[in-house]
Structure formats: structure tokens, C-alpha cells
Length: 255
Image 1: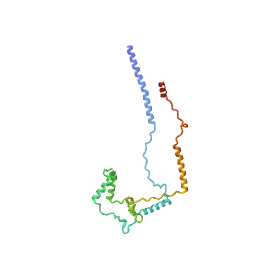
Image 2 (image 1 turned 180 degrees about the vertical axis):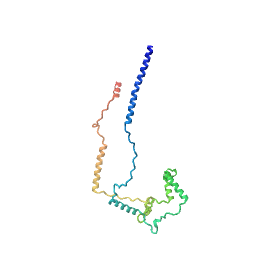
Image 3 (image 1 turned 45 degrees about the horizontal axis):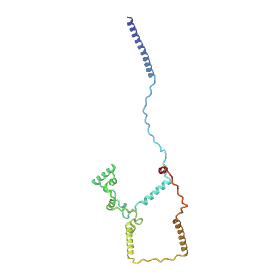
Image 4 (image 1 turned 30 degrees about the vertical axis):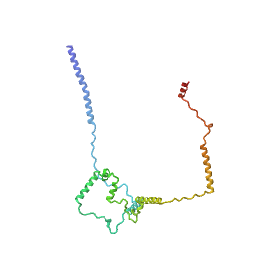
């Protein structure tokens, strides 16, 4: 019984200790709740009210064009006037017709739309021709120019100002080669028809020329004698041959 009483007492103590531990936890929770309730709530953020847009004055007032700007504009006007084509007498707007009022042909409009779509997609006709094997022949360029009747040396200026076709034919490469060929044929014909050779008679040298020639001959003879004369054997110094270990071994083997 005493043992059972001890067990009962132990169980009672255990329960009392657990209830004692739970009490501080409840107290702490109550303290936290009171703190949170006592703290004032922050006001919620309100959306800003849009203000009416007021007209603003420009920060910088555009200044009138300066003298340099006016000079540049005047220069551009004169340049455009100089580069503009001269009007054709009796022809309005250089023969360029006005924009037609009728509708465009459907087939032509379709072709134009097709080429515009190709251009928008990044397709270039020049790139296609450059990568085509049939157009890699350098001679095809000349054929294309002849077929299209393109004047490569033409000009938009008047002939009185600049005429690229005003040069004579003998100034071009074909004319120059033809002139050289004719001169060579004439020279060959003259050499074949020549029957005698005219020799120029020898002229007698003057006294100064004779003295200069004699001095030059004497100097040349001195130089030739120095070159032809071998050095004496007494003055020749023969360098001593350097001996190595192979020479020493050969000398010992002979002994």
C-alpha cells in the first residue's frame, strides 16, 4: 500500500507540475494580445487624386536663325540651283507626265505589290544576282550594259559644258594600240628597205680630252698592277691551328 501511495503521490505531483508550466504560457499569450490591441492601426494608403494638367511654358524660347544658319541655307539653295537640270525649251517639267487620274492596271498593281512584299521581307535583287552562278562571269557585265543600252560615260551636263564623247578616237585605248601598231610596222618596213648603213666618221679628240684619257689609263694600270701582284710569303702570317682532344688521342696512338 505504501508503494501504491507513493505512486499515487508521484502522479499527483506530475499533474501539478504540468499545470504549473501551462499557466505562464497563457499569461504570455494574453500579454501579446493586449499589446497588439493597444497599438494604433496605420492608416491605409490612399490613391493620389489626379490633378488637372496645367499648360506649361517652354523652357527655352526658339531664337531667331543666326547669321551662320542663314548663310548655310543660302549656300544650300545655290548648290541645289546649280545642280538642277536646265529646263528644256518647249517642254514642260522636262517631259515628266502628270500623275494619271485613272486606276492602275490590276496586273501591274499586283507586280508592284509583289516586289514591295519581297523588299519588306529583306529580299534584295542585287544580292540575288551576285550570288547567282550564272552572273559570276565577268564578261556578262559588258553584255548587260550593251543589252540595256547604258551609257557609262554619259553626263547630265550640256555638251557645251562637258561632253564625255568629245574626245577623238585616238585618245582611247583602242586608238592608242592601233597607232602603236602602225608605228611598229612603219619602222620594220624602213629597216627592211634599207640597203646601206651610214657610219659616222671618228672625230679627233681635243688636247684636254687626250690628257684626261692618259691620266685615266695610268690610274687604271696602277690599280691593275696592285690587284695582279700576289702578296709576299714572308709577310703572310699563318694562323696556328687550334688543337682539340681528338688530335691528342691521335698523337698518343702514333707513339
